[in-house]
Each structure stands twice: as C-alpha cells, then as structure tokens.
Length: 72
Length: 151
Image 1 (cartoon, chains in turn cyan, blue):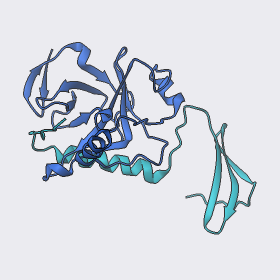
Image 2 (image 1 turned 60 degrees about the vertical axis):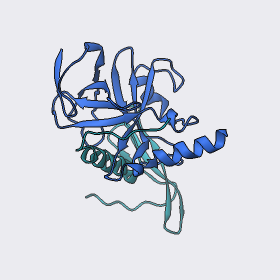
Image 3 (image 1 turned 90 degrees about the horizontal axis):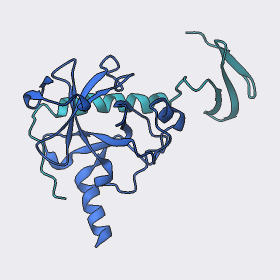
C-alpha cells in the first residue's frame, strides 16, 4: 500500500481526474474533499460493507421459503 | 418463458418480469439477470437470479411500513438508470428482507434500496445518503408504530 503524508489543504491526485484533499483535521477526525467524475462512485467503506453483509444474510435467511404473514 | 426458482421450482414468467442489473447487487456483482415475481404471500416479492437458481432475495415495498421513506440516493446514479429523480413515475422501489427463524424479527434494508426502472426494466441497488436509514429495520415494529400513529 502506498502511504503518503499530507497536511491540511494539501491533496493527492489519482489518475487523471480524481483529487482527494484534506479539508480539515481535528484530533483523530479527518475531513476529506473528493473531486471525481460522476461515474466514479464514492462511499464510506463501512456502509458499503454493511449492505454487502446484509445481502448475504438476507439470502441465507430465506432458505425456508415459507414467508411470514403480514397483518396489513 | 420458463425459469427455475428457489421458491417454486419451474415457473412460467413473462419476459416483462426479467430485470437487468448492470452492476449486480452489492456482494453479488457478477449476477446481472433477475426475475421479479409475486410471492404467494403478499406483500412480498421474489427477486430470483436467472443465473443461479439458489440465489433469490425477498423484497418488499418499504412504503407499506414506512410511508415517509425517501431513500435519498445520488441523483446522478438514478440518471444512469434512466430515471429523473425519486419521484419519477417509472420507479419501482424495494427493500431486501431478511427473515430469521423467529419471523417477527424480520427486517428490511432501507440503507441499500433496490430501485428498478420499470420501463426499461433495469435495476440497481443504491446506497442511501441519509444516516436515518439502516440495513435492518424491524418490519413488524414499524407497522405497529405506524398503526399507532394513524389511530
């Protein structure tokens, strides 16, 4: 893994058109600014992982195919 | 056309029920073709993979238990699906349901809504930008809360 040191207001460029800048640093909290073309999707890793895991769990959970009755 | 389903074995479906997911679902990126079927138990649906018979998700329309739900996904991404915005009439909105052994504890994933453009029959799993929506919302509890609100 490439590791770079950056200060506040400095940035890095990835490829030709993605720029990630350090907007603010407070304690262990870093605010990033991300400039990227609209076809590049940017998500917080833990949200992405949580949805992946939930999909897998949802799939496993319906091994029995009798679905519940919902009283609407 | 006849397809094989996890829930009901061989089933005859209309081609209009086939939904293309250009980037699959999260964690299942290689599966691109699904069929959307009514489950025998309303108000559930099955999203059945046409590539792997054992892969099928249970879906529900989240507005049934959360009428004020707005997924707040990135509009550019909706446009990739040929949709203008979340009010677009061509939208079918679903949540994936997890059903544990104790079915009262079943949950819906409101953080990762499945949105389909019913005209072109393309779908995608989005990621909500709202911190309000989690991967597990208890459906029975939400229904009960909604009933209390409307009384």
